[in-house]
Image 1 (cartoon, helix red, strand yellow):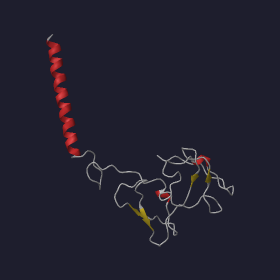
Image 2 (cartoon, one colour):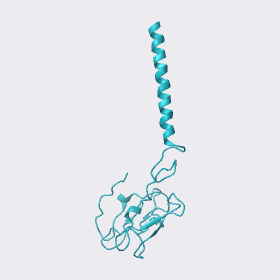
Image 3 (cartoon, helix red, strand yellow):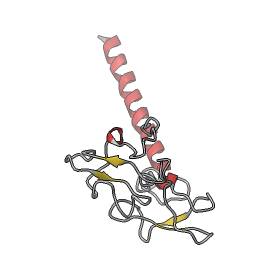
Image 4 (tube, helix red, strand yellow):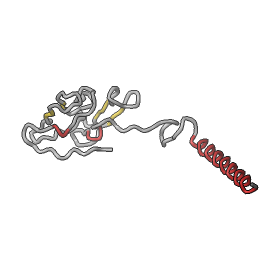
Length: 150
C-alpha cells in the first residue's frame, strides 16, 4: 500500500513538471502563436498563387510581384511589374506559341482557358484548378508530365 502511494506521488510530480515545461515552451513563442522570421506573431507564410513562380519577363527574369493588402490569393492577385518594362506572364508550352486546349478540364465540366496570366484570367473562372491531363496542344506538341507540387 505504501508503494502505491509513493508511485502516485511520483506520477503527480512528473505531471506537474511536464505542465511547467509546456508553459515555459509556450511562453517562449510569444503572443499569437508561432513566429516566423520577418513576420509578426501568428503570421503563417502562404504559398505564392499557382503559376507565380513560372512568371517571367521578356528578359527571362522574375517580375517583382506585390499585393496591395496581403495575403495574395485568387480574390487579391498580386500586381507584377518587370524591370525591363515588359508584361510578365507564363510562356506558352506549345511549339506554335499557343496555350493548350483543355476541354472539360474544370471541376464543373467546362473547358479551361489557359492564358499567360492565370492570376488575372483564371483558367476555370476562379472555380479551382483545371485537370491539366485533359489538355492538349492544337499543333500536336507533346506536353510533359504535369507534376503535382506540394
